[in-house]
Image 1: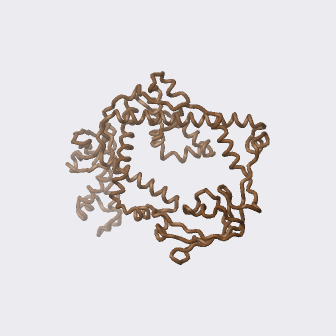
Image 2: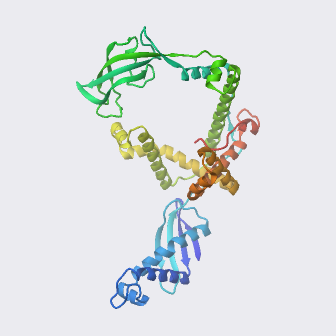
Length: 446
């Protein structure tokens, strides 16, 4: 087989492939054996008619069409591998020659990955956020622990305050009509949590047990139930009970109750270390963000429209999935915003273009630096997944069998980002180790 590449404009090429005649003949024979079983030819049992009879009965065109479907896909893949082009879309195929006894010649016009002109990506100056845990940070964490493990005690006397939990019965009307979902009994509502429509909770502050109040609110213009969006509602609310948080004192007993430690000082040290690790992770993520952003900004590449459109589709699908998890459909959001699909796509285009350029630049750096995903790398990642999922390694390996290319790609990109971080320098002129200290190079925060 022979393959040649002719470059066209804008990252488009014509791949001309010549397939040897014997291979075409084998494909024609396979096509004959398939088609002869599908037709009834007078005078012959199904599947027994000779090839020349089949050709005379139905013509050569169906035979050659079937043979092309057999030989061209595999020949195209081999030609792509031989010429080392990187297609990013499906090819447009044109048959140039398909005659018995002669080589098959076809042309495949296809968009390929564009050439990236890399700029500076080594020695990129970055600012690493300071990692510093203060006593105030530790105390704030302890305060949140107090809140989390606080006990709710009934308030027999006194009125409802911010932070209390009110046990309420409520029933709402809009324009004098009841609506499903606007009523409830013995509902626990934390005042100040923002659980209900804005203004609802504030109007209950000061109420006492068994008191009834009328609460008036206005639904937001973007409320997920369109029939209520922007409308005023009147709620009849009765306070059935009031519960108030009782915070445990910060002492050794508290430490024993909420952790594995015996003393409050041990708990504080653990909190300090956890906060330090969180800050280290955020600092490392910020360094990765900076080196990626600057390496991409320093490079030049013509973005293929097909990749940008594909990325826009991915962003739309991701948006739809996130909205669905909130009980809202993308169609509902579009209807409320008054935007067309074309407007939504244009809104997402800048992010899509940024994502595509980032991918192309990181891939180009990986290629320039010879980044590879070894079998050891793959095994290590599968073991990490198994630990995370708490499943046997072999089970995870079996599930990943059809996605190993994607896993290898992720490994290579992560190695590339780690390389950028390792070769970056602090903006203040320090050494590379000052930048990557504490960095977690397990992935990119893009």
